[in-house]
Image 1 (tube, rainbow, N blue to C red):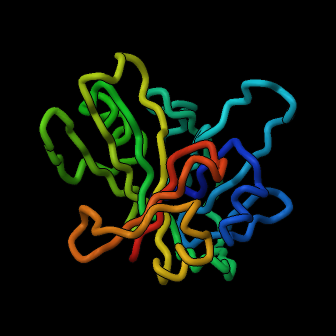
Image 2: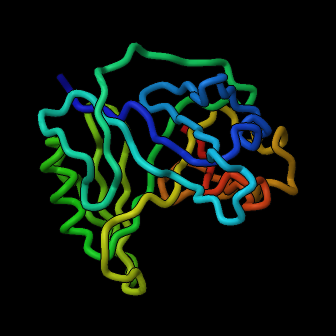
Length: 210
């Protein structure tokens, strides 16, 4: 059985995600092809400093049962049936998740050991190093980012990129005050736009053409 990231768990406000034109079910699931999102509202929404962002991921199809992959909170579940919803945003699926690390090689080795998915390539831009894993055949891409200013310690989830059918239509739906203008992505032939922090998702999120 091929490994897969079944979903990423995100601590945040489900209504903020719905405001983008995403379907969020009553139990917090954002159904997407491949890897879904699960939005978990903090238990005490009145707390002054409620943690937000990606709090963990759930894997299937792995032989190694671990609760942490170099600091990335990890749970396991049986492989689920494909689920999808018709999102007004035109969301298709997650393109990749970004993980910040002070030691790319260490984090990459931990991912490979837990999933059997080896590092695909490394890209170097100035003092930044990026490494890429794909979890399962055609599955979620994990982009590891190493920078000198990242303090030593465990790896941490940072942000996500969602693929959409029509980026211009998605930006028009969200509104110019809540998302940046589309621009060319690093990936040749693709375009990307970044959702502004004022939307209140609690983590960096970008939309990209497939």
